[in-house]
Image (cartoon, rainbow, N blue to C red; front, top):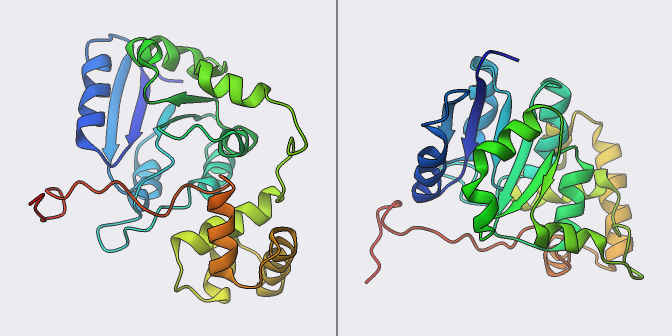
Length: 235
């Protein structure tokens, strides 16, 4: 790791990014090297700029042209395989246990709930912890993971969930296109999806995505859009 902990931020709300910058810019051992509002900006920036800790929202649009949620669950294992020395700290408003569990099983170093003000105030300390190989969970996230019941395990395998997250992010993509994104054969993707359909008791991609969202396995399909940011009006 460099002398300073290099931090990148992906969040689609500028106010949130500004808050993180306020917390971090005065820290002598931390440097924010990139901020991004869209998921499709992330991989090109990481290819150009070394990053030690990535602050990652799980609910961001892919691009200005594609406001569907970017497939973060698909991305986390891929990023950590490409950049094994990078730590990922998810900061999200969502507290569904299945989502938190999937994020952590994907290799993230922590899950912070956005309304956890005590953790946000100590963001620099949390970043130092995960940069050194530790983990950090908001109390709400920790309590969710402690829950036990009949639904303890994910009803879908990690690869099935990954495939469905791509279906949600790219609803018009063909099977071939999605298989290419996962670096697998089209037949393998079809097998993953068919297995997911059976577990979810549905017959189509759209129904599977809807059911997975209902169960909290995928983030909701309605993004909290800032109308002014996209050229709209609140009136």
